[in-house]
Length: 286
Image (tube, rainbow, N blue to C red):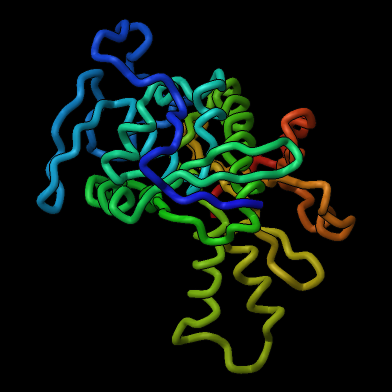
């Protein structure tokens, strides 16, 4: 796997957006019913956003693209531009976002060849965080910047594809996606739980793991809490629900696959697709 950092002579990933773009092509729409998470511009025209002494020119598509990239940490622009579901970010200007130092580009190489992915800069994450209001119910959407595990970059870039398939199923079933939770957040909550001030002192580690798993509706496998790649939270008939999604690669052992039982699993390549919908994969939020 090769990694490429941002540079001035990188190729443009999409056609440069124009101010004469047809309204029907550039209109901002919600993706699978999920509302905009931030107070950044929502309209077609670019607006100036002042932050920490700098001016950023953003329209609704570009703001939504930043939200999407930040929510998944890393994704391929082609997955958004070429997909039928990423409707409100398909026509954003990726290069303009990079020029404003809000996005970074990386190059990944695997059996499918080389392709570019994008991730937020720290500046991009801070901009989103500063414009994300608190939610009336539940925690707000988390955003991430930079690459944490380069060796897992190809895998992580496919999480958005798996999400998109599941979000479409949720929408067809009458649900409305409200938030996505990556394994980073779930694992961070787990570590906070293990290191809390009032934690057990009797050495009952398995009991603590079971307590956390039950409270967060996560499976235990061979005594360990199993985390999905992404948890999709959504509303359905006035209830809060969630669906856990995993991208399974050819490197998964039988034991690893067994530990993901109950998750909606998607193959590690686009040809495999996602598993058929199983009502048992839908659980109430704890």
